[in-house]
Image (cartoon, rainbow, N blue to C red; front, side, top):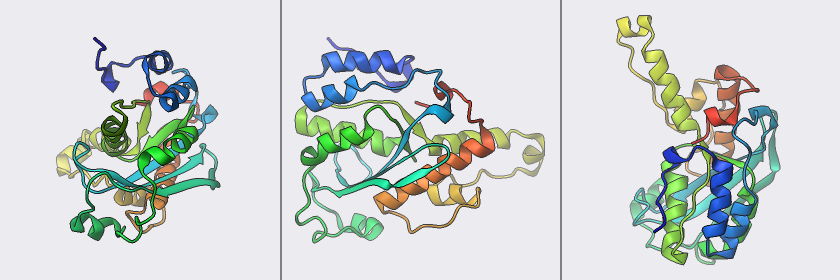
Length: 239
């Protein structure tokens, strides 16, 4: 019986992905896992990242589907805007009116959209061997895993950096400072737009997968500049 690992149990992502390549039954996932990842002591300045964002039909990965994907390649110095990709995805469930209000993706936008399996190989090729950066991993990690389980009866797991988690950790650390404790200073919002404002990053229209992916890449660059060092080891940030 195969153990259902959680990301907290994975101490060596490189070895774990090698194991997943051997256990996977899907050729696309096998190829993805065989690309591996960086060793845990690799420095942030030596890593190629991909910022990833999904728009979905709801917030429940077990019931809802991915309807839009955006990604952009970057490193600590540059965001490679020519290396962006985005897709509309034909959802597995019905598009809800309340979700349309949020992301403004309509039925006409999805009229000729491919399903997730049609673009899966291309998506995995973009992600393979890179460190993936997201803002709130419960969306990108859980939805891709759950949607693939429904489609091919096999999920997916890989290391991520979560810029929302980084902001939460920073807020927690700052709230412990004596002066803030005396003032009972409340923690600030860790939503993507609010987090960006703390680093004087520009405001972008929300709920577009590609725009949010670029916004996430910029936020991570700023977080590293303000709170870490370029020679920080990746094991201190990925999950």
